[in-house]
Length: 599
Image 1 (cartoon, helix red, strand yellow):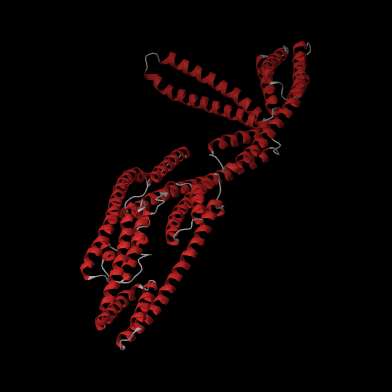
Image 2 (cartoon, rainbow, N blue to C red; image 1 turned 180 degrees about the vertical axis):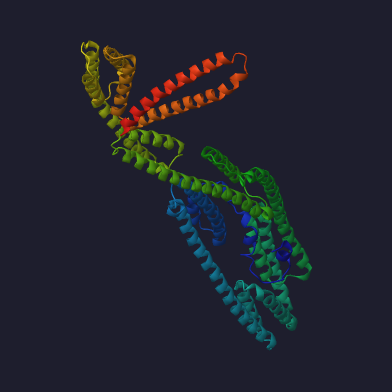
């Protein structure tokens, strides 16, 4: 309601309590900015206010501000808790949030105050309805009195009805103006129709003047009241009282009204100054929030694939939220919009962060499945009878393991321990078998050295002994790696020495014997068939090359007749062809021997 309406002389009969508090709710004595409060501080303030014996409308207004900020804090805490839960590997659907006791306390107190406020409003409405009925009855009685003949008791009846009217409280606003107009009209008729009581009327007006002067004195004292809100509320009561006192002498009417108006204007000037200062502060806050929003808006489109980057940006975002809260409220026309913009970016940022962690968790879950498969392969390798193949499997899965990214944190230790245990088991098995093999290899080395000793010390030479001993050599297993080369070289020399002992054989027979020795060793080797086939292929390739060479040389003979030195060249080529054919024959004999070894 405007100042002009409040100060309008005798314009309506409504009780202004309940109108001004709506306008001056921002000017409460507390004047507290709850946006800087933590939930603990809000709970303490709510508990304190709930025990105050003050206007329920004022209390309800304060509690709405507390509840609004508490709801914002609760949403922020739930959002942060959900993000932390997802970062720890949790699924959003499994998230459960336990509301802090402070929020529950504030909610309970708010509901209690709200219920009292609604009850109070209902009581006021009921009282206004009752007051309406009472004043309507008074008007009926007053009209009957005005229309009746004057008698000695008329004045007393009139004063009684006037007192009842003044004692009656406020009525519903839509009836107030009409009631007041009817009442004033009937009062004027009463005085106009009863000129005999003029002196009493004037005396009554003088009493009313004194009463209104007392109202003005109280209004003038309100200028000194520290709380503008309290001064305005009491001023409303005084205006209501002023206009219900009744008429004053005509010559004093404007003067007494102007006196009240001057006091009222002084209070409204204080209100105006207060609001102007508040508006300046709100404007400064608005500018600060607009500047901060320019920074905050950059977070709306932020994205990254790195956890550390998101954590750093989260700290920055939370710091900006603290700055926002410390700035305080903005102007009414911008406050809601600015808050919506800020919290929209805030929620967008944390929603994007949640999506990042959700995708990250999906990737980590996929990584977990890959590592579980590798663990299964490592466990299966332990049962492989071929230890070398098992070792190769372990080496492969270890290499693949390194390429796979992290898994959900709660499974990290378990899956790593499982994989490591499986790999260690295979390597332990290898070490155990290697130890047994070392003993076996040493025995084999002793046996092979004995055969070398035998060949080296032989003084009699027979093919049976030679091939029997070769067969014995082939049956002996592996020797220690460090002795493989030395024993192999010694054996080759020993065999050559033994073969050289066949002095009765010519060169061709010795060559044939050596070839049969090679074939025998190849045939008895671990990969006998492959080795023999490889040897066979080598001989066939060599024979083919020599045969092609013979053909080429034969073709070249046709050109020698035209040459000056034809006879000499022809003889050289023919000699080369002959020697090549001889080599082919030797290799063919070897091939035949090799081929027979495959049968």
